[in-house]
Amino acid sequence: MQWHRGQLTWRVVRSTRLSIGPSLRHCARLPHASDQPIDPTVEVPTPTREQMRRHFVQSMVPMYAFGFMDNTVMIHAGNVIDLTLGVTFGLSTMAAAACGQICSDVAGVSFGGVIEAAARRLGLPSAGFTPEQQTTAAVKRVGVFGGVVGVFCGCTTGLVNLFFIDPNQKEFKLAAAGENGGEEFSVSISNDDQDGVTVIIIDGPATRGLIASVTAAICTADFELHNIFADKSSMGENKRRHLQVTKDGGQVDDSDLERLATIVMDACKSIDKARALLLANQALGKENEELRQKVERLQAKAELHRITVTKKVKPVE
Image (cartoon, rainbow, N blue to C red; front, side, top):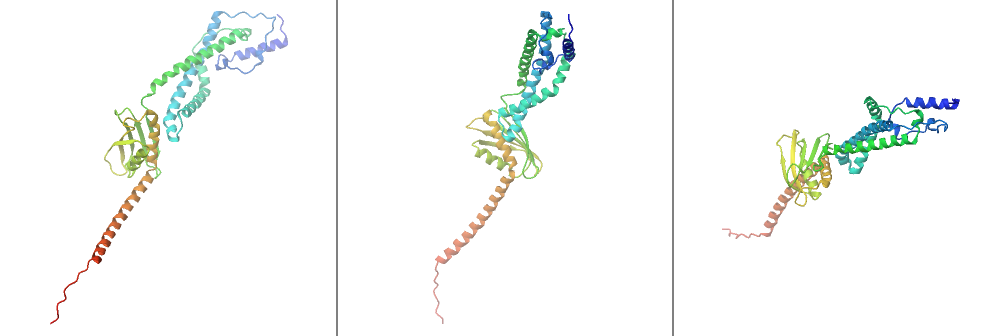
């Protein structure tokens, strides 16, 4: 066998690259000097079935873990974003899913090395390929196929996380600061608390005008408000209010719960406006009462002017 200087250099570079070990870069590698075609005069031994099996397992296991983590992070992050930022800022479900995918990709980049290290610690048997065998098309295809199978199985297994999210109970719990200086309220809405109605629970300090603001907002949005139950508490103390709402005689559809939650939360945040309207209404009522009394007095005077009384004058003796 002839050892040319260029060939020796090629072998050293290839050996250095192999020292990195198996990684997630099996499926997508940057161009490398070792990807040059090997010397056609060198006979490359055909990898055995056992070597191919080991190579497949080594390529699949890290990608399986990556796929499972990717779907897990995306599902839970997307769900949290949908129920919080999605409701607050009016994001669609697809937008929340896209934000969850961003979180998933960031987690993949951050913990990719951890996954590789954990896969190496599993003690998977090495395929034992020679540097020449690593460059063969069959070995590359098996590595890519192992990565694809690993990602597919990992992502499919990650769908198990959907069982931890109840699709029949779309519940939103939001915290908002009122525009009137820091009064905090939390809103919970659910279709599972009671049959036939949608239950809205508002927790927060006892404040004048809150129920008026929420009631006006619900009725304006074409929902029906049936009952209101509230705990007894002094002004400023924490208070829980239960509201029973329907739509067209039945529970509010799950697709409308997000909109209803947003309406209620906006009403809680705009309590100052409702309070101002309430005070203005009270002032108008007082003015109307004063005007009514004035009108009554004027009417009484007018009646007196219409009456003419003539008394008989007695002769003076």
